[in-house]
Image (cartoon, rainbow, N blue to C red):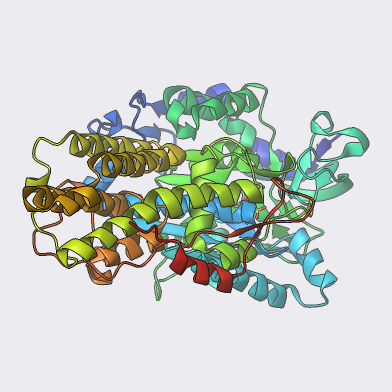
Length: 625
Ligand code: MSP
């Protein structure tokens, strides 16, 4: 059973500074101005907090200041040219990245790209969490120093992000000296607020979670339910953060701002942690050398979570700036969205807001906890040793296929299982066939019959056209889905444009109209413009998910990369393609992944062809029309 024995001297100090530490007294000192988050749109203009001031402030200490105000609303902030700040977790460097860790980053990248399309300034933060026992142990196991080990693994994350087309703005490493300075300042603020005390602690510790566990949470043999490994008994003299003091505040904040935790079905869990009572947690380790020293106590290092969470702030520092909280904060704090996996929700939705409150800083606007990628029903993870190699997937199938599959096929927020056959079937059907072949056969017809040149403006071609109406409706749908972080549904809406385009093409059959000649040929040329305009719109609306595929589509439509780089969501309005625009030589934009049914496993095991084979097949994949 975990028990905490407070150091008598420190305890007395703590009691002095903490004489108002009960939940009720904190609640008395915190004034919550009630504004509910009621709108469906998570980041749209219609959020009520964009039009009304929204303050949570503590009246007992000026240093606490405002923790949320109107400037922090995603929409109002951006109207004031404040950035949309999105974060991924800072990844542990105990092992190279796996697909589970890449998943959060791919999703964050899609959301960031969507926000940029809307014309918002975006700060997309990612990075690596490099301190703590498990990193030191991993380094020792490969016979190198923790610093060397961190350099190698942190670089592996950067390389993977490059290969996956992740356009982050800031990459923070918790071993960065600037970060260390900010953590120490943050710690000192919390200390000055009377929320740190010293005590002995005895309990069961999961090294992989880097967290003390309560016996009731554990499986047989004191195994951690996430990592399925036994927790170890630990007894330490530590510094504690007075989380319990913030119980009332957090409960109230959540009941008044339920959209703080997303998806909404995760809110109950967070609320139940709070109502069942919050225990102070230890924020230092006497037994761990690989970490940031506790200010004024060189024998202890700061607990990895207390260290890493502050990375979301230190990441905001620009090159050459003084590493202090004020400077970092002024570059974009608070974040609009912390994107995380569900296993680290407690740290982000309970510990972190309390820590920020204690330091007198504004709270993030939203925490979204997505589900797990599973393999054979088990969470995929480094500690479980059942990971899927993202580098391997990217090398074999390319970044668009990987990004598309996980964002389209896993409902964002829920768990999703990976299988290679499903992966191949999905990307072949959606990207190679529905989208790629539609573009390719339309361009083929245009080349054959119109010298690859558009005969008429797309706006004129589609006057009174119901297919155009359907496309416009689907674009609106996709936008709403992106705004509410329903990424799979956003992909689905784009796919529906592709399906409708194929249907339209087959119904209009321009190839037979061309054969008739005369007025029929003119109609056929007009139909091609309509389908190509739909393709142009697909290239914009799907670009947050598959940016390089969409660039290739744009190039095929006769645009340059620079033109693609400056598109905005408003360019998805029907009418962009104009008469006289010359299309590129038709070339398939997405290689079909060639399956090889292994002997004896027909219908079950599929194996992707090699990259070379894929390229050869790419040239064969255009449908002859
Ligand atoms: N270092 C902490 C985060 C500190 S943030 C200030 C950490 N790192 S982690 O590398 O273990 O995990 C990073 C993220 O990867 C978490 O959001 C976690 O949920 C996610 N995933 C790890 N395995 C996963 C799956 N199998 N599926 C989906 N995401 C998973 O926690």
